[in-house]
Image (cartoon, rainbow, N blue to C red; front, side):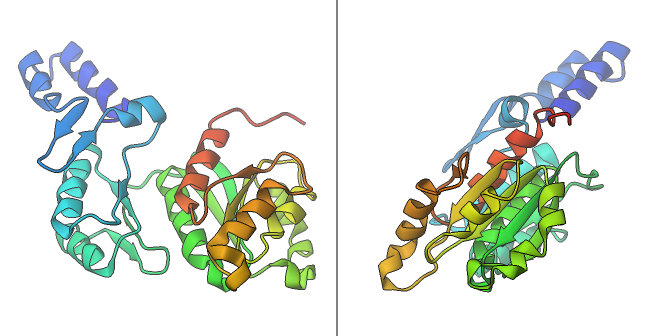
Length: 254
């Protein structure tokens, strides 16, 4: 149940197209629906601007499908992150229009019709091809949150000219999400080039002393460029949510 559907339901009751009893039936699981293995928060879209998202990791196939089906019924859409191939196969079998990204490990059922993006553009910058799983998660999540998404891939600091050549695209972005592993230097470079918000995402990519992303995380937290927002290791979804909240605030006038 999102704001638009609730407003339409109330208008239908006011106009006599729906009886109060029928409206009550539609609201019977509002704001919470209890399943044997989960409590689905149907009120989240009203509170936060987007429906609940399924974190698929460590859930069974049956649990993921059950939650997704209830979200699809309530919202006409769902997003699952960190999905396995087995979970994705079951979700696509149950919802033929669902889109499976095996690199980003997301399953997204877009609403039909899918509305035009209402925020952004958000530019997602991946330092290397190895960072694409996290960058793809961020991109799909941003799309599901209603944002216009642009991409830059393999523009890390080992070839600094690659990111410098994209300065116009950097300046056109409302928010920039920078995804990097190894030493995590790219967000500091980008943060020194633009005035828009930069969200840094450390990834677990890197050799031994990278400590599965800890080196990148600490590098981003201590970045020379001021004002960076840093999310947890491999958390592309969290970066997309932060970008969506920024984009819902009015853009600064120039």
